[in-house]
Length: 69
Image 1 (cartoon, rainbow, N blue to C red):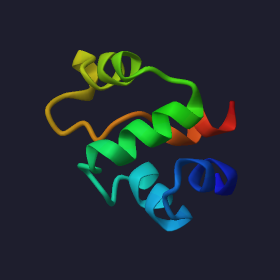
Image 2 (image 1 turned 120 degrees about the horizontal axis):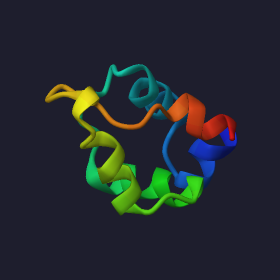
Image 3 (image 1 turned 45 degrees about the horizontal axis):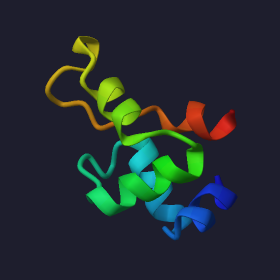
Image 4 (image 1 turned 90 degrees about the horizontal axis):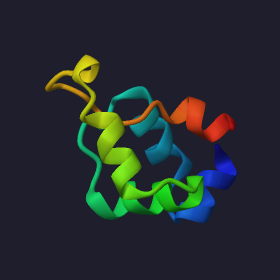
């Protein structure tokens, strides 16, 4: 997680907060930077958070899974 945060130029604490849901609506540039580091397109991110099982309170991708891969 540390390397992902550093490569995305966000603090590790910010990434932890996004990952845990403590930041429910991260800023677009933050999401874009993390997605780029993880090799995800913004279309892929949008498709994931738009899936019906996430509902209206969805906070984004399960970053712990994405970071581990």
